[in-house]
Length: 468
Image 1 (cartoon, helix red, strand yellow):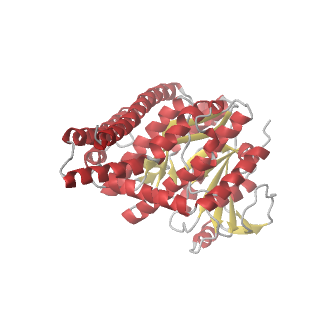
Image 2 (cartoon, helix red, strand yellow):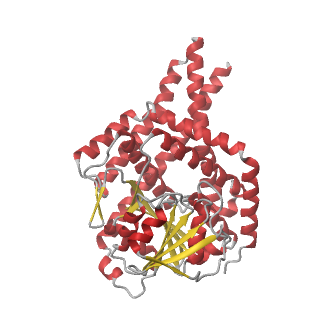
């Protein structure tokens, strides 16, 4: 048989196998959302909010050059009806007026550093407390990166749970209380995530998100559709207890546990790495645990508005995914780590990390065969159906589930824009995404020595971890 036969077979097998997994995750995600809707119908938020056992949650907000967003974000958190909260905003050496805005609007005063640093971070220069809102603490430190900023906030956290929230995110007051139930319902809950949506074009009215003007551009609509797909897929993983990410822009963790495992690591995707590390540590400690991912749309984040910034974001995300995979390569096909090691982790490599390389290879292969005049037309049609057709079907199913369950996009314009994106995203946007992710590969191999050093450091942290 000619070599082209085996090459055709490889590409068809690869995309068929991925689509089978995605279809299963879609089915499991649909069941998960349906059960969650039934649960919400009988859930009594009034009793929850007035319960004496409400845990105090610390909101840690990492800030770097956020003078345009930070005041609105803090106001949003201050006005949440959830009463047991503390806010720690950590300025990561911003070179704009982020700190000055906070000093002016919240009447910050210097206070002594009241905590010990259990996790090493860059130098903390000053600590402030708000005179107008005593629950707000601001830490000013030297620049190092988001992971180090989160660790600085974690050092100062005195609450049993902390919530890592991006400085450009809004929290919907109507659904925030949904996060409390898993904490109250099980002592084994160590981390909770919830669905994040794109807020470009949305407005915040009385701490409720108004989506009537969403989206405010084609690029925003494309990302909104991606968010719908990715978070429904995570519902599928959550069904089998195999989630490897619970959203870096909005996630709750056990404070003591994250401190015990060494805090966040130096990676471009600290949200992915910390969840994989939690799975690994808890299984090696042989302790029961739950990492919960709720479908409720709780947080709304600002998405990149230009191709340049979007490209940087996607390259960084894929680079961080590759870092996290390398840090925890011990899990691969290791039955000791359960479904996470035997199913989720291998799929991260096969279906997430390698996909852009295989997809670009498929495009180049088709172009080469066409140029040589030997393109297999049935293969070409099947390739398009498997790669483009399934994405359209998957996106359409996600929109249907959204419309039937949460109805966060009530306007005809919003739904029509997202439907249009289902048709056109495969022609240009998808190819850009593949190239941006492939760029993450080159960055990973260029920085491999540094990545490997951090992998060894994370390994040493895990070996020293003692959880009882």
